[in-house]
Length: 148
Image 1 (cartoon, helix red, strand yellow):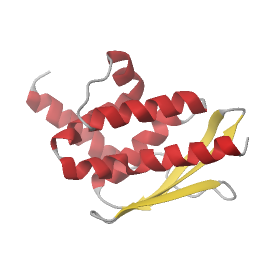
Image 2 (tube, helix red, strand yellow):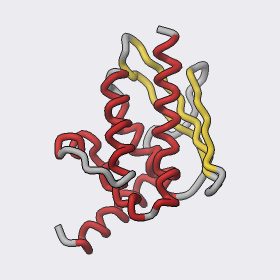
Image 3 (cartoon, helix red, strand yellow):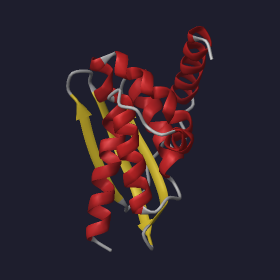
């Protein structure tokens, strides 16, 4: 795929998720984790329900830049329905990807739309924006695991 096509795909996916985020809204009475990125002003709250070691509900709320909002949206699509260990592994793979480290083709496929965010590795100041929701989800999963 040419660089021009890749950039167009990246822009399209990011803009679609930022303009019409998936799984955005509040879940009442569930585990919530809120993180912020003081360098950009992003604030993300991730809410999740884990039953029988599986993520059954996953929503986010927040404000911030296009990257943070799009990343939160794709994160919900990627992690919803996975077991806690699977979700933790996907979070680790996404982290490697946005840090510019290579990941397997299988991991890229599993990350789906989130894989296009790997290009933020070229812009170190944007890595925190892309990782914010994923860090919140990781913390939420850790807390949920303690209560099961």
